Image (cartoon, rainbow, N blue to C red):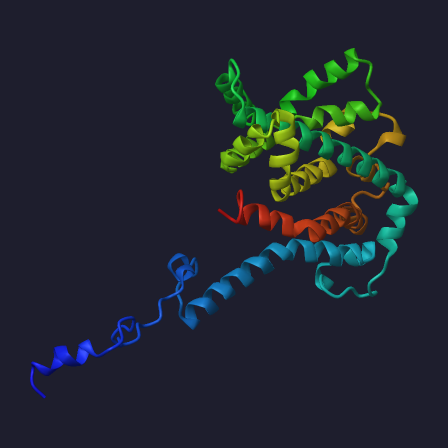
Length: 313
């Protein structure tokens, strides 16, 4: 075969057919470039898993100790030689004593009502404020937002006296309103939701305005449905904070029928000093509803952190 035969042969080939080329090597997955582990080897993954397991065990150790102490008798709870397996076996005496000496159903009901009301009001007000800071223009917007961010640095304990004076002036002491209203002020949630609304695409808002939608329609029908994971995460954190709040419910009311669970369990005392089993039983009962809430809604927290806007963009 000579060099002059090559053009003649290529001319006889079909026009649409391309010459055969060797297959390209498969491209590596894009996510491997942003791998957050120590590497792609098996040793690195095992090491990362071991470190995470040790951290989880360290975090669970206080909870395990509280559970073990709650199911012991008072004599075994103060025995350092049998810290794991009690000498007289496990018992429900601590829970029975707390249940008999207090009014746990009423305290849980009050905590549920107050925490739910605080959560609904806080999420609604914070979402509207975050939308106003993110998508509207008004006089003094930047200064007001700076003041909102600065309010995050103010400890709630400093506001106890002004809140008490305000509730006293409004004749709201020993009412649900006195316990609920001051807890609905959450500047950090306004800041979080404002940043979240900033990340949403403005093209959706512009399309809604073309269809004649106003601010309220855009906020309620366009942006809020896209913000469900973030709103759920904010609601969970607000609910946990309101449920665990002790100082303000303790100060704002002296009516036993309005006691929340953190305030009520502090009244369960014994004349013989600190009762470790009863104290741990009270802590377990107070934390149990929060654990259930977190287990049911933890996927919303993960989704709010993992995604922003549409399609994880």
